[in-house]
Structures are given as C-alpha cells and as structure tokens.
Length: 187
Image (cartoon, rainbow, N blue to C red; front, side):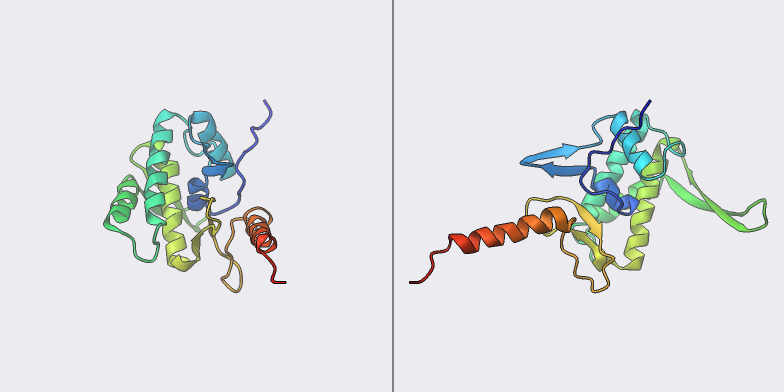
C-alpha cells in the first residue's frame, strides 16, 4: 500500500507544534487532519512515531486532548494560564521518562505511559516543555491574520513572522502592494 501523503501546508516543526498544525486554513475553511485514526496514522508517520505508538481511537482521543492543551498553552507561552497548566499537566500525568543503563553500558531512556494510548500525546507535550526550556519567545503563531499555524523560530535574528514566506509572507506582501496601488494618487 503506498504511503499516505500528508496534506498539511507546514511540516517539519517540533512534534508539539506539528500536533497543533494538524488544523490549518484552506481558503475560509479550517481543515483537520485528526478526524479519525487514518489521520492519526499520517501524523504519527510524519513524526517518526509510527510503530512506537498506537493509532487507534483511544490514542486519537489522547492526542486530541494533548492538542487542545497545547492550543491553550501557546496563546501565551511566557505566562501560561491556569487552564494551560492544568491541561498540560493532565497529559503529563499519564507518563514519565524512565532512565536506565542500556545493554551497551551507556545511559538510555524510554517513555513509559500508564496506557499505550497516551504515548504520542505525552511525547508531544513533553516536547513542548523542551521548547519552553529552550526559549518560549521562539514559539510563535504565524503573523498572517487568516493563518492558524505555529512554528519554532530558529532564525538567527529571531524575526521570523510567517509559517512560510512562500505562502503567508507572500500573501502579506501582495496585500500591502494591492492596498498601495488602490490608494488614490495625489495629482
């Protein structure tokens, strides 16, 4: 069976933000990759979690809970609300990282969850904690007023504004150009 192509416009963000980006705008309509287990399978594959995490209805429910918690948290990553903290901590309560010495004698770790269905959800929220530790100011929403995608700004000058310069950045430039050309010129 050929692999399913991921239809989302922005790929490659850290797993927590990639989970948020399972909802996107297509014209005036919000699209959602996670409307069923097939979409969950696509998302798991895109993030290297296929085979490591279940892709059933229970896992989908857990991932949707994590996505909602992350959506609340990214509204203000520098000063999370009580609702954001409660949502993130509710997902994190389902798991932990177990550290151990591997067969090669080197330190190793693995994610353990109370139920397998929570593994992908837990990994996504744990990833968000890593982004917060790195720099919460780099967690950004696209500046285009009709875009709902998020990204982690890795630009050197920390000035990235768009999920994609080719799409949303170009739309903003075109909009500004259109506004300038419509303005009446003084005679």
